[in-house]
Length: 531
Image (cartoon, rainbow, N blue to C red; front, side, top):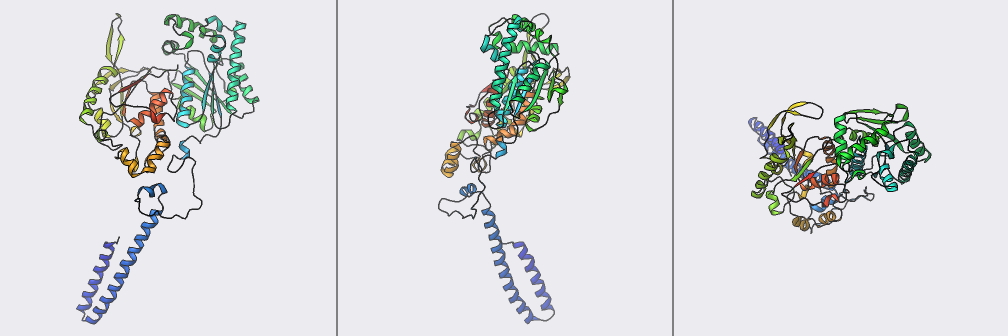
């Protein structure tokens, strides 16, 4: 490569000088200058070419070895790099960086749940445990005293069993508490950062002090925090009890009305002795009706993550509808990635999806005062990726305006149903240099990369592209928004993205996520709940 503009500038100066010398009557001088300048010009051109070639050669040496393999033919010689002490990461060449696989938190944490039955403690416990283990790769386990009690004395016990004047039952419940706490301490004694959640009512200061004392006596040096869930909104409490307790083992196959009546009696027994957590008991987060949060003396990376996540939780029922885009032009020829539009079949699916969204997702059944059930519009959300095929899949969905749409906090607003919301964190996993290729082409052109992906699909990163671990990192904020959502959400995106979202909400491991089957032309309906 030669910087021609630079040389032309100097050549123009030369001819100007020659013209001036000839005008002044110095022809011999012009010949000498011509010869000298031509020599200088040739030398300059050679030097410039060598310099630019050296720069390119040096730049190429800075690429990673995996990139070098991609851009050299099979017959060319690989450049020799003088790097006797390379930086080697445990995950392997071209793999996910350490900070993405959960090595940031440095302390073990025990969360002690506090609250009356029916407030949603178990729901909060399970969501926290799932979030920390899935998105941060930190081992997490819940020790639910109710499950220990069921194993020890059975299920379907009457409300009188929870009367604190029933000394025999009180002794049995104390054994369940001790067993759960003992297992938690044993779990926390294992090596490495981990999270343990002690899920019980812990209704009194004395009971909470006993838990703290046993943790201190274990000499584990763990951090401790209370999460107290308070629900004094009668409507929210009634809805939570109806929705959740019908699923619990204690009330399986029991008439719903009888189950609610018995549970309210059980709750009253705890209310007689219940006292809220005070400042002098330690660090805590108070969740008041899932709208107000009081935070006291919370410090550290992992506790702060837990607080932030908890502030997005609620127990209101909500539904997610997940679907891939319709068949794309690239799908028809087996290409991955790209930004192609829909095929004829893809457009047909888009029309059917719009009908389903308008008639099912955007509607709900309500009972009028006269007892008749009618179907009315309900607020719903629409999320797509920023890629063309997902936008085209959602193009036929209607966007009706619902005047006076009412939310759980009492607000009434003018709501545009299925308002398009294109989000970059829903874009498909980026295949880097392999974008737009078929898997057969990748196997033939880059056999080492193809084999590496087959060996570890979770952590493998496409050269200049992404891995599933990278995608998890950008989906974490979206998971928080899904936890926070109170309206039905229709998500139109891609197979790689839906694999992670489905794995998160259905309890699959990170390692299982890349292998979840997400067929075209299907809608998956999710109804998250505590049990």
